[in-house]
Amino acid sequence: MSSFIDRLLGPRVSRAEASAHSLRYGTPGVLLLGARVLLLVSLFLPYWHMELQAPQYPSGLHMTAFLNALTGDVAEIDGLNHYIGMRSLYEAAALERTIGVFIMIAFVVMLEFAAYIHTRWTALLVAPVVLFPVVFLVDLHLWMRHFGLNLDPHAPLSNAVKPFVPTALGKGGIGQFVTVATPGMGLILATAASVVLIVALYFHRRAYLPLVKQQRSASPPAVTG
Image (cartoon, rainbow, N blue to C red; front, side, top):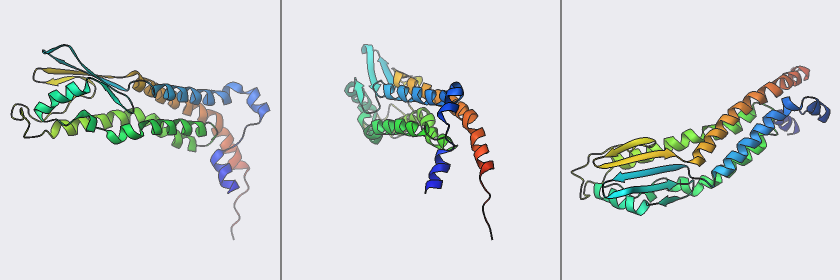
């Protein structure tokens, strides 16, 4: 068990060595810390905005999505969507909103562990966090696609609107309604964290891969017989 943990954590760096090469060994940890801070701050910020523009709403209708909640003119937008047969926005990504905060906290803990691992297993811990912004947008697109392509045929205006795919990012719309979807600051920070983590992995590899190779070459060969 001890040998497995040693292989998982990788070679340790003495205080003297770390002090002599503080930039080399300190950079990965600082970048991982920065990514954790970005993720924690993103928890409290919007991840997605959508504005609906229509003649009867001069100021438009606005909806904001956090990791765990929808805010804004959701009821009014649902009322308009009802006429074309689209389900309530509150039904979309219900599971994701329930567990979103816990997933983000888990990501922060994973990055904390990654700072103490000096082997390639660090990349395994970091990868889900790096991919999270893309997964968020793909999940958002799939939900909007599902809602737009599965309209209620018994809705009042079902004959006037054909199934469509709402735009997850950018400008879209149908009929006299125009939607403008933009990323929120939370998603921007999560994306920035992904970029920081990619840079961190580069410096992590540069710092610890030579030590891992040195450790392997110094290990005695396995006994066979």
